[in-house]
Image (cartoon, rainbow, N blue to C red; front, side, top):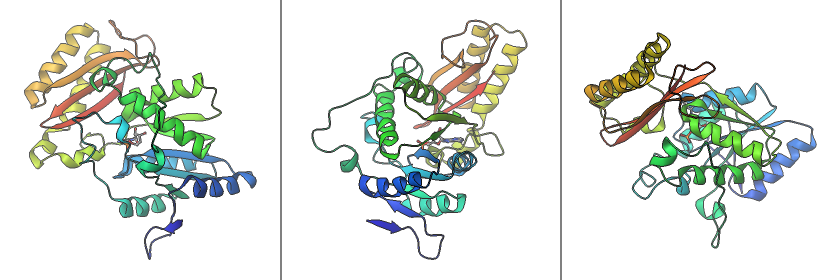
Length: 290
Ligand code: AMP
């Protein structure tokens, strides 16, 4: 069934089954329209909507998917608690100009007997790949399924999840998928905190501390570009985060912006400072081009 999202609000169609999704996308393709896909896990904020707008600037029709994918959460992670609000998401997507919300359920995505997984080696290793075993395999598998179901010309992902973006670019390139993967800049609060659905977990006190993550990244980046020894700058950054109230700090590292290889010296080409750190029980990630 294709249902409308909210009464009184621009009626954004919602497809839940593959057949409904295909019927709509096939219709667009028959008209010669180009299709974009913005995969999300819902609890949408302005960062997600910026991806929709970027997609709209590239294609004629935009599908946003909302699927809280169980296979990318570890056993002790927040799958059950992850915020879900489909009605609000549909209203926001309609307001941003998306044309279709694709919201499959878990049983439809992973029917009994489902046995296939996609592993992207290389860029999946290190950083979040080491700290969240199985995470990028879960992401690569579900995104491959979304690609095959939607068959977009363009897919937009945020640089907020920088390692994920590189994993998915690798996937598309290695499997010869005819999809242009576009990375979108990180949308931040005015105090610098990167927007994230998980920011909702922060207490008022933690929320006041949270912008320290981005401030620290900027300071470390400036020190490296100013000629500081990379190791010293990173060690200072980790100490600073702990002094600000973060901990544990999963990683703060300087990597090559395209391959994620570790850089021991200031980058000659585009580098990326990447960080994951806890504030209380909430794990925040952020990154900065250097
Ligand atoms: P999620 O719902 O967390 O899986 O994120 C869905 C997409 O939105 C991913 O491509 C994220 O990188 C992207 N995204 C999340 N937060 C932001 C942000 N603050 N700015 C830009 N993109 C974001």
